Image (cartoon, rainbow, N blue to C red; front, side, top):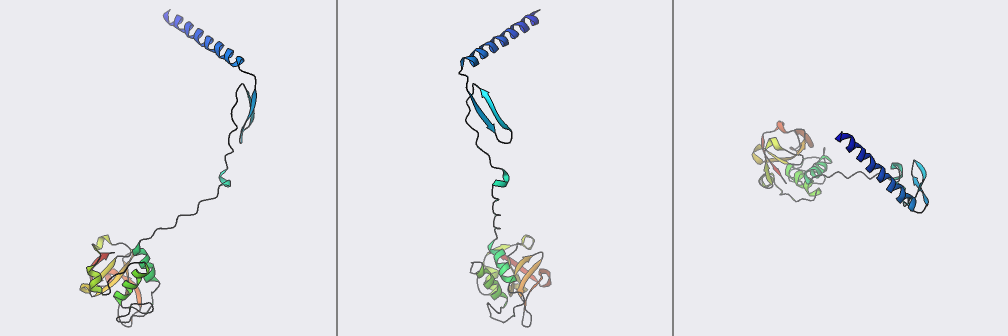
Length: 185
């Protein structure tokens, strides 16, 4: 019985609220501003004044954003410069732009990337930050033969280097020479 009386009082409360709402709605001036909803239609809602909704551009109205320029490290830039010299002749003591010895190629490639490196392979092997062979990244300077030869790590286990007289600047496996160490600039 208590639940029926609760139900009845809830029904009366709802009816009262509806009556008050109806009174409040009829007390407002009877004006109807048309409301347009893009892609849906125009409606008149009596007693409600709502500002017009802004037109939302479709995705085809918006110009696509330009793709972000790829960010490359100084080492990656040096590798691209060294790659542009593949096939150039080896000349002892040469540091480009037409002929190179090993450290001259490394120095020239990094200079194209905006960084000045030491001139000799021994000095290149002593500067920068030491990097383990398992941690090599594109652009790391690799030393071979106890530091007497240098090249630039090109990724995928390869190095770009100016090897010796009669051999042009080339791409070779890191494992093709006795590895001494690597430096990151």
